[in-house]
Amino acid sequence: MILAAWNVNSLTVRLPRLLDWLAQHRPDVLCLQETKVPDPKFPNAELEAAGYTPHFSGQKTYNGVAILVRHGLAASNVACGIPGFEDEQKRVIAATVQDVRIIDVYVPNGQAVDSDKYQYKLAWCTAAAGYFRDELARNGNLAVLGDFNVAPDDRDVHDPALWAGQLLCTDAERAAFRAFLDAGLKDSFRQFEQPPATFSWWDYRQLAFPKNHGLRIDHVLLSAPLVARCAASRIDRSARKGDKPSDHAPVLVELRDA
DNA sequence: ATGGCAATGTTTCATTGA
Image (cartoon, rainbow, N blue to C red):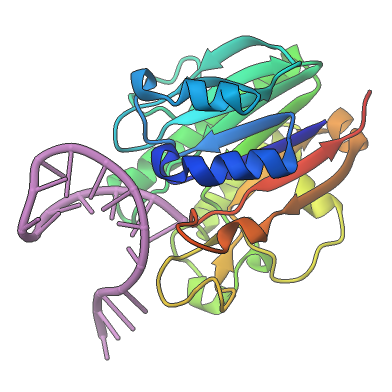
């Protein structure tokens, strides 16, 4: 089973590239973030024609998440948001596919370390950690995929000195990420030997991608039973190349059958 | 010392992202 996550930075703009990518990789499940499309305008027909059933929770301009499930598989118990955490922003959708509970997250960016949005980010992460813990108690096969907007440690930063204490790299954000792991999850990417300087996001400016000035902020977290089944975890940096790319590259994991 | 790009709607600039 192939699971993937991709912040597409506008599903409307990225749809042609997304369809190409789906045809090339044929993941069983793809979790999207930053779709930026209200539900009535979601491109259902195009994705169905591509062989995927979408489940989505979107809004105008900002945020928006979707889980695409390959035809032949069924999704059950689709749920949006974090139970008990009131939030206008569409950042979470969950579904069960085969024996795996999947949660697609778009963690708040935080904007600036001294901002209200940063405080919202930390509060959101606290609520999310509780949600992951609760879901794990219900189904031991839990995968949390998405844009976490945190570079977990200095290996995940092209220039750690430059980024020290900056948004996405602060102690509090990294502690929030560790709290996700403490809920019973592992960073699938770090279960394998990886090339140094592997990132999932590169700024559109300053030739950041050709210079590989990136951060690894998109992740797939797996519970212990799924770590045991995980055969690979990687980032498809080729998706960042060419015309009109998203600023994020997809993350993929391969799970062996139970 | 600063901004540099891209997407969106509030559209010919402001806001946000990361």
